[in-house]
Image (cartoon, rainbow, N blue to C red):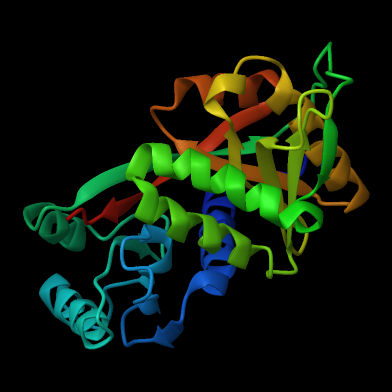
Length: 270
């Protein structure tokens, strides 16, 4: 990994946005390019935000925010769904569209983008973990995602999100790794992935089981992910996380990541 030749913040933000589109496509039933956005739709999973969203949203050629709103919402309605998330094509969300989405109940989410500068391996790693590719333990990985998400969103959405996570494993550029503690049982206690985008690797879907946090599990898993990044000869490793997730940001900074930029997207809740 070349940690000295840093691409621009815009390039890194666009790489993060691209990873979202590339991986989430696997869980969508319809992907269609519109005039001012790309629509990703899964009517069978209407409450899964990452399966019902607009990507590459843009205002151009004198198009108004209202026109883009009408174009996107009409397409989703025609497919018995609704647009749950709006992702702009450019690093800066179009101000007029941001104002319109806010007025219609949208919630702005700011993500910070971090780049690995100099990896600092943890001083202590757990030696009791079994770390394997999620494709090798699909049922255990699905159960992990179900339990994590059903606790937050209810059983029905938890089931959909678990299946959505399995669909992502069909994306060949994603290596999703999971950690287990064989001395306890075969259940997955943490997961983290790496998406290959040419010379850039993007960390993906980093999560630890609630009762296993702050036990050194994720730092050990991320060390394995960094080993994978080195073997893949990525020039850069990136990730994004909510700007207010202070615990996650502190963890990443302790491993040698630094904040290089941020971007916004909008959620449209029920």
